[in-house]
Length: 258
Image 1 (spheres, rainbow, N blue to C red):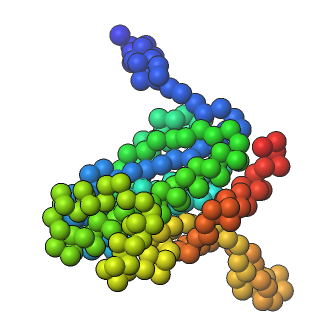
Image 2 (cartoon, helix red, strand yellow; image 1 turned 45 degrees about the vertical axis):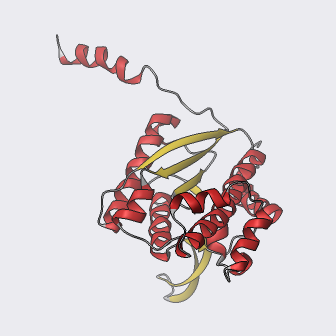
């Protein structure tokens, strides 16, 4: 069989399940670290419940995903996950889902592994959201998840450091309300409200414009040129204010019928 014929025959099996995201839909990619509990607690022995070194690894990986060829408006990381809001008009790979999932997972895995010096991997999934309200809800969901995880982690590791074993620490937290957990921490000298906001709210990255001095070659005059750079925000707002912040990132992209 000629190569062209064989290629045409076999390509069908490779592309038969291809799905493309419809035009006008927002794509939000979520990447999760695979077996990161073992990686962070046993292999690398990061501090618990939070370690700035791990935060910086996740932030740096998120930054690399914003510059790897896709039009990413916003990246958000908390715990061992990264969420990416892609421009609604993103057109790479003809919007084929398998391409986004495989490329983003591979990029995150490679970047994180290189920086850590250990093999690490991420999986990826894509949410297809038809309007800005759902985009806002998505990121408020992850923001609230960060707060919940932070409270639980601080309670668990506070008990562990006080001498409780895994089973005892876990069982003591079962059924406790948010108020009860805050009181537990307070009894051990920890005020949850005073903890760094990046632990409770995650870290956001987005593009901002700034002015940079440049020289106009025509008149050899110094001028201010507008450039874009990635801003890392470790003090994100909460609740409705956070929703307004997310909405503001999509505003330039709502004028085409969102």
